[in-house]
Length: 198
Image (cartoon, rainbow, N blue to C red):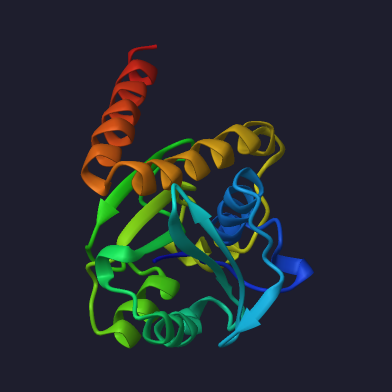
């Protein structure tokens, strides 16, 4: 079984915030694969289904971002999920907007959801789908920035980016993380280089 976790904050006031990109992507993934997220378990909204005959569980922790790891660790233990079968989808300040990167392991980079996961799981080698949101001008603006909605210009591009990130999750499942990384990370680097030329 694969456990696919989208990170975010519960509540309508946060629904369209940059910090909720993980929720947006896991919900798009659930739509693409016909998986209803209508159950609750260990302070998460979850949905169960099968993709290519492999069981998957989708989860949105409802504990708020900085306590996400508590819920995810309980789900992981309950379903007996290894690190190689845990996929976490999250926003990333270190990547420009319109950038999606896949990664295995790594640190938390100041992301409170990732920090909570690492502390509670006792491991950092889970798979990651990183959704770039860019950084604000000043470090002091980070908290306000991640909890703010996307700009109107970003909103225009958002559906296509959410779709692409959801498809990247699917590629991890149907091939493997290394093949998916080669596909998406190389494509993103080429796109950034192309944009820098003009």
